[in-house]
Amino acid sequence: MTTVHTWAQARNVLCVRLDNMGDVLMSTPAIRALKTSVPGRRITLLASDSGAALAPYLPEVDETLVYNAAWVKNGSGYPGDGRAMVAELHERGFDAAVIFTVYSQSALPAALMCHFAGIPLALAHSRENPYHLLSHWVKEIEPAQLIRHEVQRQLDLVATIGATCSDVGLSLATRGSDRRSLQAILRELEVAPDGQWIVVHCGASAASRCYSPERYARVISQLADSGWQVLLTGSAQEKPLIESVIRQCTARKHVFDLTGKLGLGEFACLIEDARLLISNNTGPVHIAAAVQTAVVDLYALTNLQHTPWNVPHRLLYHDVPCKNCYSSVCTQGTNACLEGVDPQAVVDAALEMLSPNENGPACLDSLNRQESVRARPAIQLGKP
Image (cartoon, rainbow, N blue to C red):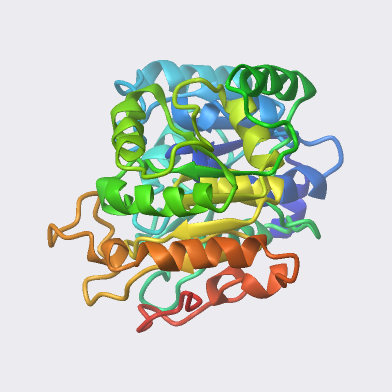
């Protein structure tokens, strides 16, 4: 029996993605390939609190289980009980498991859970020989031999067991109920209802990926002076950051603070209805890619795999010798790969993207096409 035929019999499949929301979004094309390649296949997502928040908006996912793994940094709560999760996985009788990881993570702890749960088929990238922990081992070759976009990495993984699909866009289905509640919030803030707004997301889960409040304020002030409504978003915990940005704005008439006011569904609708998102490279960028809203991405060079996928965008960064550091806090203490970006360059990129003459898809950078690049290039991100 061939590998493809073995997996073709798997109807009850567990997809394991234990890091953050953006990582789950970047796995959705591969999950779609798994779902559609076998008629009647049921997909269960095992994700952290952060990733599981997407569950109501992912049409390919039939059910979601929440587990905060001790071996994955995901910004969620205290690690869950591994023994209880193994028991639950065993009870559900999965036919197969696909473990999605970035190349700096190990799939083996999750593979061990699946092994103890009695799941007969398991697929993952692994640097080490997993012996019987993985029935289908794809040897890890990143970053030594190539670097792929995270979306392509996962599509390539599931293709090894015959799961492919023609639609490789990120998946996120917005809901009418969320859009109606969003509209009520915008009316209360007196945002003009014509959708001529720009969303600016100033926060990120890692300090190394944050453009400074002072520079954001200069960008926002210029765009507001140009007549654009600028809507600032963030979690309730990011309220001090957004307040700092607004205090430094020289133009505030068209600036609106939505920090802590939106649920995930409303936030997705806001981005979908926006003309443009300006953001650090963090989860909202992948939401924008999923709902096909153009992006100006202030792209910290901590890694090269997470650029906006298949959506018009501009990447702005300053090349530095310490790129590919994978650090949550800048090791040099300067955030030079972002702080070297002049605010005027951000404004110019935004206005270019907003121009009716903008050639959308031509904005895609080299990592965003479905191809591999050589490891650790001098710079492979599309020049701004």
